[in-house]
Image (tube, rainbow, N blue to C red):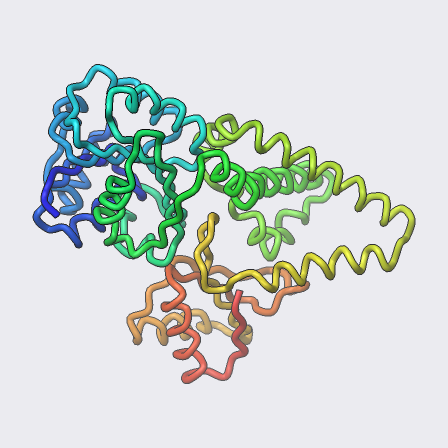
Length: 367
């Protein structure tokens, strides 16, 4: 496809979308806009965008497709600015926000002017942030949720999907409210729970100095999403406030029930609680990308001798297998390995598993 694409927000998501569009539509012109001029210049120097624009209005008025890839409250402000711009009648505007209902309400002013707004949420992420971390493969096999506005035609939805086909994502069309309930349950709410677990550990660490060292293992892994950007999650929590309040009240009720079965020493009830959770969790798709970015971890049960980590990484380097993180667990309770290696993709982890199986006698387990 030919045309001009404006990407507002030169971060991980905006940069990755620009790369995907550039790959599948080489005749298109990609313009980048960001209030952070350093990231904007970096995007241009890396070849992620063709042009930089410091003027939002001039770039928006040239565009055939506008992608707003900014925090959700900033997206609302940008949509409001568009009211006074002389946008093309045929332009498609989309966003990448993690909440949809409030943003879609804001877009209604554009819809009354004949502008087609199609909400979007690519459900993918990375350990890294910023445009330097942008990758074409970021969205492969991930769900990409679309919430068309009331004025958006099926033809325009198909056109947007054509622009975005380089993501290799799986598109789902849902209502804004349903989107927020789905992502609230399996993404936003777990972030709050993870943060609350960390808060509880912080309080306990005052009386138990060894807690920090013990938490370096499995606890740190199950709460890693609590390390996400606080500003972004403040905005998401406020935008999806009604859904989250309902979920938290349900959670409170469930915890009261758990307290009761423990107080009553209800052995069968406790067993059933863990069994039901295990059964549902074990039935979840393993190779699907969901709302929370997947962490492709490989646990390596290595012997304790000098140079063993260098040995493992040398085998991986010999096969040109990239890793995103490597760490040593200090406790083995309820976990299999001491060395944990994280990979960007499932394919990289599979290659590493094969490589280490071929070259070492260490026990290997998938995270």
